[in-house]
Length: 366
Image (cartoon, rainbow, N blue to C red; front, side):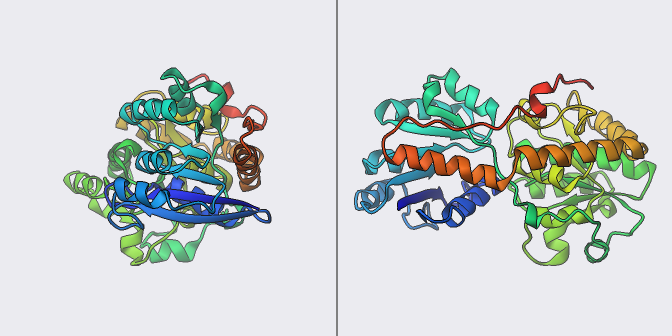
């Protein structure tokens, strides 16, 4: 039996992102026989109030075989508080400062780093994390939770007409998610045709800023914040059946799980070009790409895709096919079982990668 302790962050200001929360849930509950998982948290609302308390608490932890740290403060506690083998998963939006701290910590302790994107893995290697200790495991989609058919009842509860063209902004509304740009593009389209509506999930620390920006556009009727309209918490994939298209406006590193979910649902995708998006999407193969940050150009791409039914079908079909091939939950869990088995025994960790996907064919065509 391999016992894994998942150490996460719980402060409101540093709470784990959606992709991290989902990964922790799967890895603590769904690995199956031969594995046990437990979650503990660092932060004002957690099991330990701060890093120092976590370091003291971790020194009492002896019943686990691996500590999996999610976030930099969790890594500090794991490295300084225990001699148990440590695995570290950096945030999908890890910045340069956190990468430099990681370099210092991995020099102090032997840590296996597992990244959710190839671009983040390259950043880790560039600052000195040995490539043999830095691995790639992409997030996994729980296909059983993905509904492909339009949900008219959900649209009605969101106060959306059946004729509306609903643009769902990808993932949480964070500064890097670029939802302000998506709102701006949606506003341009809404002026041209009031049927265009923007749907936001309702989670993320830049939500209020985006809502205020939309109000300044004088286009507030186009906006629906799902959790506020419905008055309940939702999972992101629950909104996919209400959408006609998913728009990713990210300007840098961001969570990839929402894009993977949109691919699995077979929804047409319009996305800005970033290193992260380029790992998953290829222009006019699985999505329509916006080559530079421009709300006007994003609106133009959305309009072109909406008016081309054949292109929508082709992109959706290919995206769904590649999602099932490269982003399955089974593949995700199998790779993590391998990491835990090997590292708990002090062996060299080798992650078996699936065959190269669409991202490696992407050339950034606009």
